[in-house]
Image 1 (cartoon, one colour):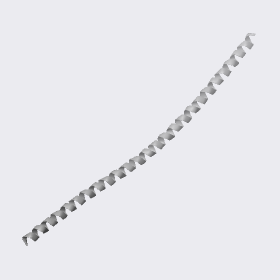
Image 2: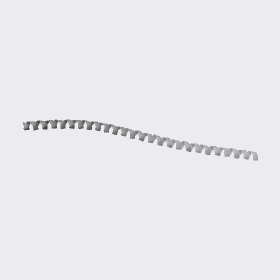
Image 3: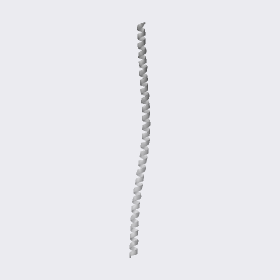
Image 4: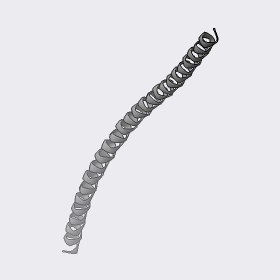
Length: 94
């Protein structure tokens, strides 16, 4: 009888250890799943941020190109104005 009680106690202890181990493993898995979800969310946020950044970069490039064209146009207009002023000055001098 004493031997059976000892075996029963050992079996119960083994089961309790197994249960604790499984609970620990479940908690680790739950934490890993939560971490994985958090990483996925951050990856999605980063993707959106990069898309916005790319759009802003494209807009900046377009504005730089437009500014360059306007500067060229302004330089050309200045040259035309200078030529017209010189032409009129010569006309009045002669």
